[in-house]
Length: 395
Image (cartoon, rainbow, N blue to C red; front, side, top):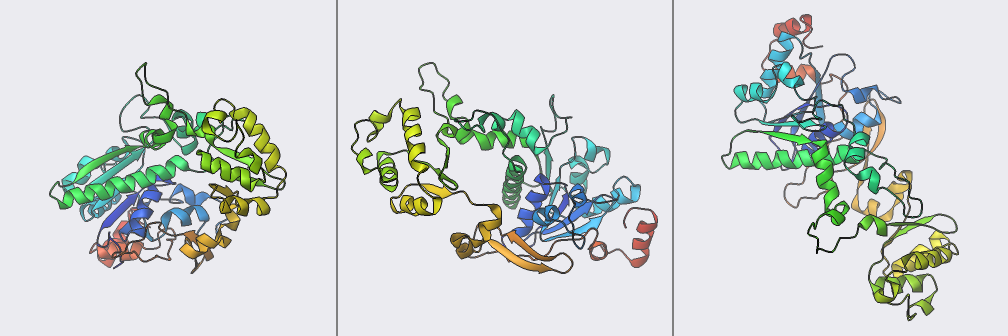
């Protein structure tokens, strides 16, 4: 049995692509036994991604570590019976089909709760289980567009909206689902029983955006001072040979920036030296700062900024992260050998627990890899398993 705070919890993972699998991998990283139920054919759609090695590609690897895989055709009567048997013996089920699909398969929450009243059943969807958009197809970039992210993703110097070019909403939804599931498990331990969690990517995206992205739209009274969008303060600044991101707000931070740039004369400048002096002159000061940054190489300027306590960071390529001294110190990235896919580098679970630290699970399931052991755990005989295969329920 794995270590970790969720050791002893069994999860049936009926999800595909990124949001759902991210949620269930977090539960696996925390010590849960996660059984990934995959459809017939190619299994999880992410298995169709190119550049696979030994039956594993990076998309599958980075959202399914620590799980076990079984293929079940839930559209068959025998497959549904097997699926309900799995649900009857689990603590948690997670699905991200379009609303109504699992109900049509007789494996929705009502069916699951009838077999297992204590089940925590999480339904993830693009827009929610009901409502005018509930039937729409939804993917991360679509939700980014309709939830405000694209409109905010604008460089003030080049005001063209853009996407956040990774699955931001998918991953936020996965983390939110995991939090909701763990909360429901805690409530169950206090006597609340099982329950259904309805989580939409749209709601997650707006909630995730709002603390800073919604600042200008939070205080609604006419006499309230409108908050400033933090996005307008973000700066990606070109140097002579690269870029630095910095974020300065206080006089002290501005003074540190001036000293790092070799412009100590600006510290006591009547306009640039104080907050009041800079008010309303951000474009003018920004142009001057851009000229100064262009005189420096990143490797020369960044250390000077750190020495002067200026919040900043060099723009680092993903392929260089493993060489970053702090990431190496933290052990953020882990390398291990998969039996068929070879050498793999992945990010570990971020939180560290002083008492119930989960062990890193160096495993990624090949499609249907664990069917035999999962069926045996259900108490099925060899003949019963063979009958299921002949019926096309399992493979």
